[in-house]
Image 1 (cartoon, chains in turn blue, brown):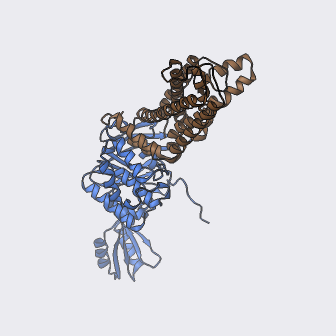
Image 2 (tube, chains in turn brown, cyan):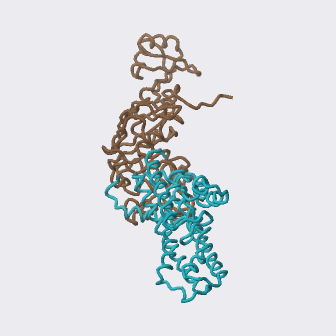
Length: 300
Length: 249
């Protein structure tokens, strides 16, 4: 379990993390979302004791990270795939980490095999692709068989097979009762992986909700009828929010599809199509963070 | 602090890190080469000496410039972590920052002591072969032993100073510049300037030492030199730990 209480990090000119209070629960995959510069990485660094918060606290398993004994057995972290010496071999990198926490040498071979780097274990990390680097980072995080995992953008640079592998890995780790916090900017990836979402915007907490709830809140019903104006006014009277779509169909929020079907029947409007649309995470997320994007490109 | 992991485990880990990068072996090879060659030539051009310790001192000449490699080794052991981002991983594995730097220092110091002792013995051997001294140059002679042990002590303190500077400055170029500046560049400049103030200043700089003498600087006793070097090493190291613990990475 990871607990953040009023976590705040101010740099000279800007607030990176602003009074963040969140509890990351074990047994589920918690997705950590936010636009670039929203404070995800700073938050993760505060949790790991790499960055000192200006105010507030971050604890892991009830204690500040720096006070954990044998930290790699409690927490596995992937902070930055470049956080290693390029001239060192993958094996030596993992061996040094294992030794620093008095983990058995056999663990190194196990995680190398687990992430599929056997063939290049004794090559210098310098020649690794981004995807191989991510695999090495994940191997390091898993070395101590930890209760808590913090992974910053683990699928960045992975091929589709690697992405699926990470997804299944995170799923199984969470199912074993571990705490898994994973940040990503790939929404579609999160939608398939996370059970719960924590969304940041400009350092502030925008949402801390189960995935289904966030998607449900942005769901709508699509209904197509030759008597669209008649149906639209009836739906509005019933309390629905109706918008006309480009193809002439109606997009209705605030009413369920069975209610809409009943209203159409009572109004005498014929219905050619009636479908529930769950919002994609991407749409829900963009709506949530629309005002909070720090770095936005200008449309050409 | 992370109790539970024995300190020895962290030291072993730091040894793995040190031995698994090429720069360590480049520094080691150059240190051996420069000091051994310098020692052989130093002994060869000293055909005879009035006392055994003076003969040994000539053979130790290679340490003058050779200790540059000790500075590079010590500095890089720390700054390479910052340059590459490895420090994030290292401090996640060992959150006690003083503990991490102490382990790193132990490894660099042990390695420096080993190499320097080996080289000092080689220099003594070169002196016995190439420099004539009445009564010979015996390893059992306390004056000879003092020269050799002083050399090991000074190189070791130099290594500690380098590690401390690395933690203080964090950048390889900055730490090497600062270290070589106060140890190798400023002392002769100040000595040549020749004013009383500049000579006083040169006396309190941690200049490289060759046996019991200052290398290219105002002459000081070996006790004085060892003390100055010790104070600089301790100050840089302690300040390095304090800043490492306080600053974000």
